[in-house]
Image 1 (cartoon, chains in turn orange, brown):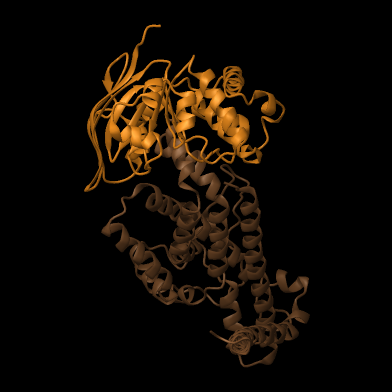
Image 2 (cartoon, each protein chain N blue to C red; image 1 turned 60 degrees about the vertical axis):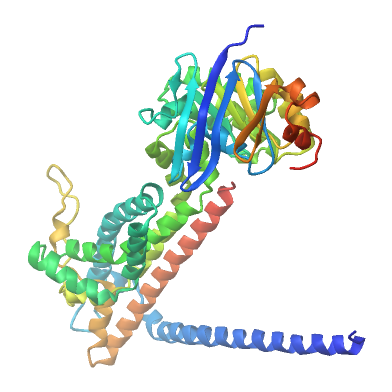
Length: 255
Length: 305
């Protein structure tokens, strides 16, 4: 199958005030593939992921250098002239801890559309149903769309957050350790979901679990101390890493 | 190695100090409570028998038995409405700005410090400021509007501080979720920050109004009358546009001033009237604070993150 680029990170440096967190990352993100970012705590993988939707702009002292080109229009989404709102409208994100709004299930999923000013109720309902189906939550939620989202279990809440992100048809979906706060069954649910979703959307996932990365990803980037050490097909990275540090990490010698 | 006996002695000694501290705390609590209860009971014994329907519907009078608090409670009510109208939008907007928009640097820290200082300024100072600004400069007169603006300024810091606290209680994850959906700052505030903090903000508003309702000094300073035997202009009129704001410019009195007026008379019968007014004021404050506590607990239950 043909590989298309969906985004390209080029010499990305990122710092918080004086503290440099990413030292020049170059990385491709392929369309309809799952790219996993792995590495020990503090290696900068979450920081890199949050660059993709300019989450750092919410906090003072964030400085980007380099580019992230979003294909097909090859716009540098880190450019000063680009409003972070535009980037976030194109790139969805699911966070480590489920963070549904204390509103109804329906309102949660419809929120992205509401923000964009969509008023047509039939369109919203249709999109909510489709997103919940994609996120594997439709069966459980269809009879309680108007009940509060906070009454759902943790795993359901996280799937709701995925549905919320999918409802606006993002070009890339960012998942920041989406299962770290969940029990094993919910985790398996979400992993299966990721496999399914790759047909429709490009995914970048940060994970602490190497098993998870091996199970769900097509490509893997191993990061260490703010550097990208190795990038390649997941099969190759987990069976036959080229760099000594990658091998050490994968075999559990540090991290 | 300590023997069993040493350990027991050691525990006994520490238990003794535990007990001493608990007792000290209890005593302090009782001292404060008993003083308050004595005050309330004394006030009630004198005042409660005087509270009849007539007391609410009569104007003050030369005869203590005929005198009532009609103009005082209507005045208090009108001033509170004006105060709320001035202070809530300003205070909430300022609080939202400080939490969500302003950069966190030394300027914002100085502003923050000064807001807390403002909350501690003696209320009579606000009265002096209002006399100079509202009465003399802006020529608003000794009116309900002047009083509302003055008390509005007085409670503004309280509303700002409680608004900020309510907003700070919202987890950052909620903000990030909203922004990640492509929401603008205003959308995030409008859809999330304000609705989720409204319980806390309401609590602050009620507490600030319950403070304002008992304020006397600044209103005396701006020249509130102590004896008024008429009501402000009715807010509704029979000619278009049917709503009449002339009452804002009318002279007024409020309940604590009425109380002060009666207390300063030599006849004991008037002191009974003052006690009755005091009981009513106290009840209103208690009801308002109770409402605030109820609101807060209801919102805590509703907002699970």
